[in-house]
Image 1: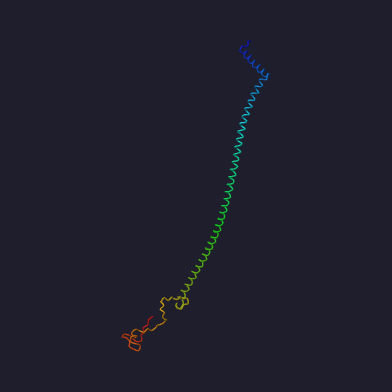
Image 2: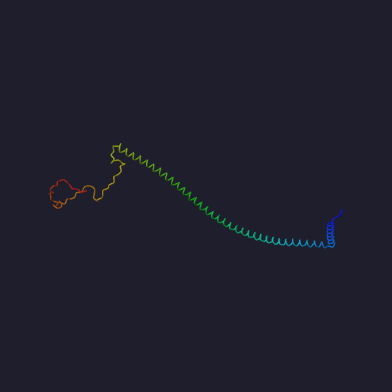
Length: 205
């Protein structure tokens, strides 16, 4: 069986490359190349790690500042909350005082209303009693006037009729007044004017 020339050529070329690699390994050149490539990778990784460390440090710094700001904001909010709670407690105490005062005034007002209602009821009861008593007295008076032989003018329950006459300053009873014609004729004259009868006295009330 005949081997193709192209296949022999490819094997020879591969053999040549492998010999070259073996020679490089024996001489240490390949190893040095591998070390250089590895060092480059290490340097790249270190550079990336350094950048990441810088980013992490910045993040730590930002977190620290943010936490500090949060603590300050929390303290300020807590102070405001305490102040507002203190103010609310004071306002609540004032409201409680006003409420207690209003409740006390309400109780006093209710007590006064109760007293007034009781007094009003008592007065109504007394008024009803007085009305009933007056009715009985009026009925008794009417019976006395109708059934008794005593005149009403002599009754002890008779009310006195008020005197509406004007006071003239004169004494009670009749008083004689000398007529003008007698003054003219004189006291010793026995003559009377015509049309005047003896025994008739002129009186003025």
